[in-house]
Amino acid sequence: MKKIAILAFALLAATGCASVRQFTLTVDPPDAKIDVIASGNQPGTSYRSPANIPIPADPAKVAQSRIVISRENYKTMVLLLSSVQGDGLRIALQKTPQTHYHLKYSLATPVRSDDLTLRDKILGITIVFGDQHIDLKIDNLTRKPLTILWDKSDYTDVMNQSHRLVPSGIKGENRGNHVPPQTIPVGGSLQESVMPESSITYSGGGKGYVVKPLFDLDSDSALSLKDKTVSIFLPVTIDGALIPNYNLSIKIDDVIKDKAP
Image 1 (tube, helix red, strand yellow):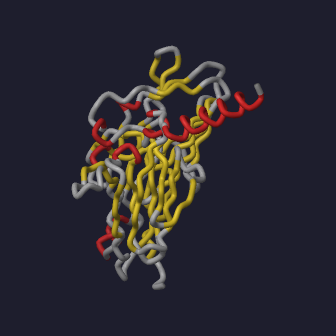
Image 2: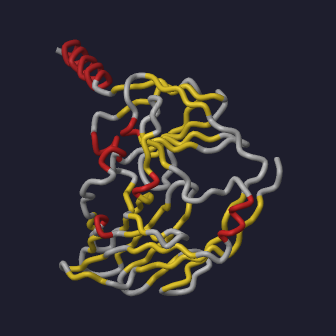
């Protein structure tokens, strides 16, 4: 009886393993770091090329995951795991130009904050700008559930152009479709990476969908970004009623040239 149980467990384990599809990611240069991040800005699982990366059987987990490929002196590339097709993919990173800048931000309205945080009686919000996406941490400080209406969310760029925000869990090919709202329970929090819908593009060449940078920081044209503003509108509802307070204006305080390697 014991042998039968052990055999059954082994067969179950083998079946479970077989249900997880893998693909091989080959990167040039081969010593680039490959991180598979499940959601938000949480720590991911790291690999080296050639990497055998599992694709979870759960579509929800696939939809929330992205692959970040990085190496010093090269441009970081972000791929949506849901866009990977087939069982093999080759990526060649581009070298970082000699001129590169990074930005310093502050929250200008509805409150002034040098660390991009806001806290009132309803929400606590922390904003972190990445190269291709914006990480949001939203805390529910009320005694009722809150709902974020992503379909009505908005990112206004430095040219005053409006773009709907898309959470990272949405597949690239579905970026223009309805985005389900997300509810934050009482005392709960939501961590979500979002990006302008227009920044998700199909690259062709078997690479699937990629996320373009929020700003061009690889030339001296980046200097023109100083003192410009972008804004994020988060439509929040309680009991179906819209709370109109969360139109967040973010100022680019400085454009700083990176030191040469």
